[in-house]
Amino acid sequence: MSLVFKDKGRVLDVGCNTGELLDFAGTFGCVTSGLEYSDDSREVIRGKGHTPYQAFDEISDQFEIITAFDLIEHLYDIPTFLNNCHDKLVKGGKLIVLTGDIQSVSARASGAHWWYVQYPEHIVFPSRLFFESLSNFKLENWVPTYAAAAYNYPFYKTLLSHFKRMVTLKKYNGLPSRFPDHALIILTKVGD
Image (tube, rainbow, N blue to C red; front, side, top):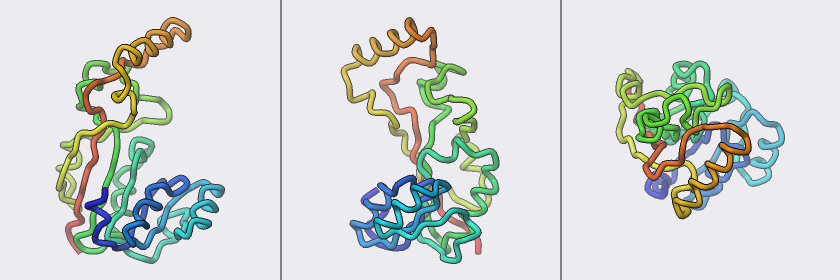
């Protein structure tokens, strides 16, 4: 993300929670704003010096960068979300999305039991093909990555933890992966 923020510009983080990514962007001199539903979280980001918004229609500015980390999988209407982002980006602006990769090794191996499928919270997992087919964005990069820190721990401890949960809670939601299970997706606005 350092490379993304190095050019300073205006950044909007959608679903920013308490603004940790905005804090990081601010260290590069970026002008930072956050779109967040929670009143409490908006107060926190306001206190940190970021501009808070509750909805896209409140925003009159345009941005060089819009980020949406661990957000898109919660949305029922992804086309409207992408159109809103397109409208708020300057020409050539970047939309950076982090989400679960439904085509990852762990997702394919676990199927409906993949750990990241959590109905009704995580409901949509757009594929690479979906992002490549967008007419108003160009897919610049698809970077396989990790969302959980489990891959940092000794694998046997992670497995033990999952087996314990399966026995005590009688719940199986996939095994931990030693492979990337998320994608950092970099899209560039095309058109107007």
